[in-house]
Amino acid sequence: MNKKKLKKEVWSHFEHSGYIRGAGLANVIEDKETKKLLADNIPFFKEFWKTPDDPNFALLEIIIKGIEYLKPGEFLAERFSL
Image 1 (cartoon, rainbow, N blue to C red):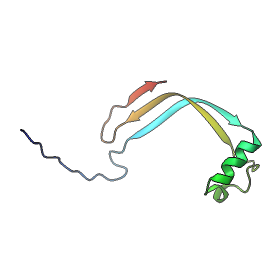
Image 2 (spheres, helix red, strand yellow):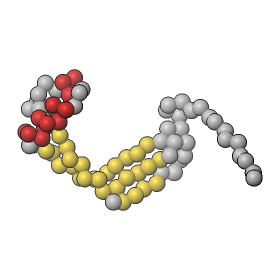
Image 3 (tube, rainbow, N blue to C red):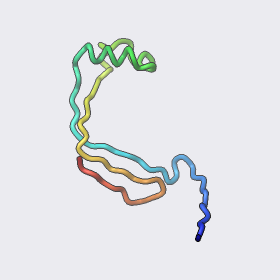
Image 4 (cartoon, helix red, strand yellow):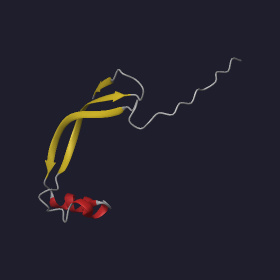
Protein backbone atom coordinates (compact mmCIF):
# COMPACT_ATOMS: atom_id res chain seq x y z
CA MET A 1 0.00 0.00 0.00
CA ASN A 2 1.39 3.36 -1.04
CA LYS A 3 0.83 6.01 1.65
CA LYS A 4 1.15 9.68 0.86
CA LYS A 5 2.25 12.20 3.42
CA LEU A 6 -0.08 15.14 3.82
CA LYS A 7 1.63 18.48 3.67
CA LYS A 8 0.12 20.96 6.10
CA GLU A 9 0.40 24.58 5.11
CA VAL A 10 -0.55 27.59 7.15
CA TRP A 11 -2.02 30.44 5.12
CA SER A 12 -2.94 33.86 6.33
CA HIS A 13 -6.62 34.74 6.48
CA PHE A 14 -6.47 36.97 3.42
CA GLU A 15 -3.83 35.27 1.33
CA HIS A 16 -5.25 32.43 -0.79
CA SER A 17 -8.74 32.80 0.68
CA GLY A 18 -11.74 31.69 -1.34
CA TYR A 19 -15.29 32.93 -1.57
CA ILE A 20 -18.89 32.08 -2.37
CA ARG A 21 -21.02 34.64 -4.22
CA GLY A 22 -24.66 34.48 -5.08
CA ALA A 23 -26.60 36.40 -7.72
CA GLY A 24 -30.32 36.66 -8.13
CA LEU A 25 -33.42 38.71 -7.55
CA ALA A 26 -34.23 40.58 -4.35
CA ASN A 27 -37.62 41.49 -2.95
CA VAL A 28 -38.11 43.97 -0.11
CA ILE A 29 -40.23 42.43 2.64
CA GLU A 30 -42.54 45.03 4.19
CA ASP A 31 -44.59 42.66 6.38
CA LYS A 32 -44.39 44.10 9.92
CA GLU A 33 -45.06 40.76 11.65
CA THR A 34 -42.20 39.06 9.81
CA LYS A 35 -39.82 41.95 10.53
CA LYS A 36 -40.82 41.91 14.24
CA LEU A 37 -40.37 38.13 14.45
CA LEU A 38 -36.83 38.45 13.13
CA ALA A 39 -36.02 41.46 15.31
CA ASP A 40 -37.19 39.56 18.40
CA ASN A 41 -35.03 36.53 17.55
CA ILE A 42 -31.80 38.08 16.30
CA PRO A 43 -29.53 38.69 19.31
CA PHE A 44 -27.57 41.52 17.66
CA PHE A 45 -30.59 43.35 16.19
CA LYS A 46 -30.59 46.20 18.73
CA GLU A 47 -26.90 46.86 18.10
CA PHE A 48 -27.85 48.20 14.65
CA TRP A 49 -31.55 49.20 14.75
CA LYS A 50 -33.91 50.45 17.46
CA THR A 51 -37.11 48.79 16.23
CA PRO A 52 -38.28 46.74 13.24
CA ASP A 53 -39.88 49.98 11.96
CA ASP A 54 -36.48 51.72 11.84
CA PRO A 55 -36.18 53.21 8.31
CA ASN A 56 -32.58 51.94 8.16
CA PHE A 57 -33.71 48.31 8.61
CA ALA A 58 -34.54 46.56 5.34
CA LEU A 59 -35.49 42.91 5.11
CA LEU A 60 -34.71 41.30 1.77
CA GLU A 61 -35.80 37.98 0.31
CA ILE A 62 -33.13 36.90 -2.15
CA ILE A 63 -34.01 34.37 -4.84
CA ILE A 64 -30.67 32.92 -5.88
CA LYS A 65 -30.26 32.31 -9.62
CA GLY A 66 -26.54 31.55 -9.72
CA ILE A 67 -23.56 30.83 -7.48
CA GLU A 68 -19.85 31.44 -8.02
CA TYR A 69 -17.37 29.53 -5.87
CA LEU A 70 -13.62 29.93 -5.57
CA LYS A 71 -11.73 27.36 -3.52
CA PRO A 72 -9.03 28.77 -1.26
CA GLY A 73 -5.69 28.78 -3.03
CA GLU A 74 -7.15 28.44 -6.53
CA PHE A 75 -7.46 31.04 -9.27
CA LEU A 76 -10.36 29.75 -11.37
CA ALA A 77 -13.87 30.12 -9.97
CA GLU A 78 -16.65 27.62 -10.66
CA ARG A 79 -20.13 28.88 -11.60
CA PHE A 80 -23.47 27.16 -11.15
CA SER A 81 -26.90 28.19 -12.37
CA LEU A 82 -29.95 27.31 -10.32
